[in-house]
Length: 398
Ligand code: AMP
Image (cartoon, protein in one colour):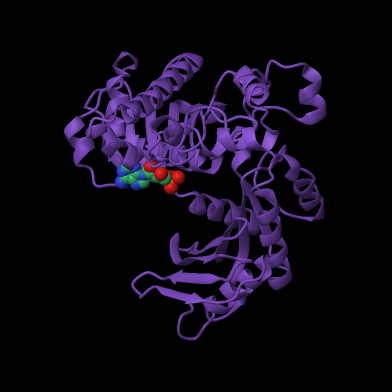
């Protein structure tokens, strides 16, 4: 069976086609600048990439173009569109939907009802779904939610210490994000160790432009650093992560800021960019740090400090740690960041072979633990699309 995976953003739409008999990606690409002008790319293994400017007014146009390309006699990878057995849709927020599911009218109405707490990702994901329903009638449409990985967290992890009615009435709670990535790397780490997830205490660090850390005890995620929104937790490229909430009201009063202006500061002007004043990109901040820039050094130290603090807290929550996993843009590619973090975690039994860590090519799997270390430390490339394809395949077959 072939599975089409869609990840729709406000003006872009990423797609991948998996052949589930082999697990291979047979085509993938991006429709960009939807509603502006329109660019499409298509990559197929062993073939030249294709790129074209095509007017893309709406998400419907983008899906129609993708389907056309997939069966194109020259560029395509499918003999007929009916080869697509199901479509998997990435939803950053599933609210209270606890697991991946086939999307019927009830689920769609629920997802539409929670766009208020998911204003950036919710509306385009629903548009992508609508377009696929129109253009691929009768094919199962599956929703895979970043938040569902966190649905079994204990209430003590997800209820904030606010008046309880805000949780009941406004659903103010920790939802957690990047769950599909944390789920994928935890599954792969257990496969590598040839152990069942139920036997392992694991901490997975998804460190990218947005970053989160999850504690997975016996296969159940028991805590995660992102919260009601992807703003909480670690400092990120441009996001502050956790700060004293009173800073928000204080600054709003002092500077007469509107909620949108405050939101802009917290989401787009803070983090690595805010502290260093240089860039949200870890690579550029580290270059400046090497050149002796003190604020770049401080920005990296704040990042390390917070990562180590959260890992320490999660090991305490789980009463131990067997596996530490690094993934995403920084986690997979930056051996120096991994090395800095691990150096500070010796007390937990994290001991790495730094030469092995530093010599691992970017983005490749690496078990960097020294033989006999109490904690297995891995760098493991994430693959959220494959995880979405797996869930979609399983549900479509059922
Ligand atoms: P992501 O959001 O997972 O795509 O990660 C993006 C971030 O990963 C970028 O902002 C960079 O800071 C970081 N990154 C990507 N490649 C590298 C690299 N080779 N070395 C260090 N950091 C990297």
